[in-house]
Image (tube, rainbow, N blue to C red; front, side, top):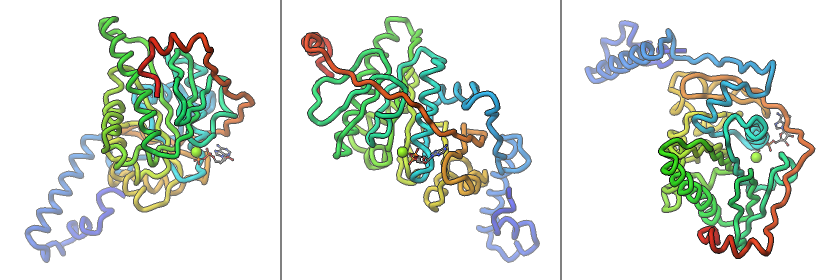
Length: 322
Ligand SMILES: Nc1ncnc2c1ncn2[C@@H]1O[C@H](COP(=O)(O)OP(=O)(O)O)[C@@H](O)[C@H]1O
Ligand SMILES: [Mg+2]
């Protein structure tokens, strides 16, 4: 691997380069120089990035990785059935149980995957007819039932933007010392977070939230199926990536774009097991992560709004009514 990977580069090192045009030589020279600069910058002797193993001898998700995820957010992406939802559950459950930060988790599931098997947090079923949305301080699973992707996007944006204003107000009151965090785990986002969806009005707001949310302690775990369909703008803004097995050319090309053309991560992703194996990429290093099965006997508990609360909610949380 490394610089000799491209056939043109090997021509450059052999004397056959005399048959190149001046433009070819300039291009090749530029590439070689870029390679050297990249190597120097990373301190590596080769461009291939070795995949280290996550030390899971003591715990599923060691603290250094958990705290990285809490700093940068995470995109979980892989083929169908590679265990993305399970990985999302394992990581979100770790955050709920360990509470490494004063954090509130909001999970948005569209595929009825979490409602009967997750931590005993609150859940609310959301349909196009739902008028009151839970906006208290507990962890919450929104079990959404929208056929229209635009409606789903509108809902997600509403939740996130509403928290954004609350967090912003609080940060002002606390003179910048915001201590509480919000985590949004978003399931099956391949269509709601596609390039096209994020270019629309609601989508642009969402992209802003994802890229600037950290200023207001808002973090995202975004789960999706096809990296190739996900918005590049979104993927570029998220440093933490968890790749499940992918074999499609377009997906692999996007991994090369994200991790570096000669990083070799694309080859490693191709070789992963069909489910439960992931490569975690933090922007500079890669780790192999074995995700266990999430076998929790518990399930979320339905949140039912009390009649007497409705008036207060209508008064205080007018913005919450869809
Ligand atoms: N770590 C794992 N260990 C054992 N089985 C797993 C694991 N991860 C996933 N599976 C199996 O694969 C199936 C699909 O997992 P799921 O998380 O729903 O995939 P995805 O969300 O990627 O489509 C699960 O029902 C389970 O049987
Ligand atoms: Mg899934």
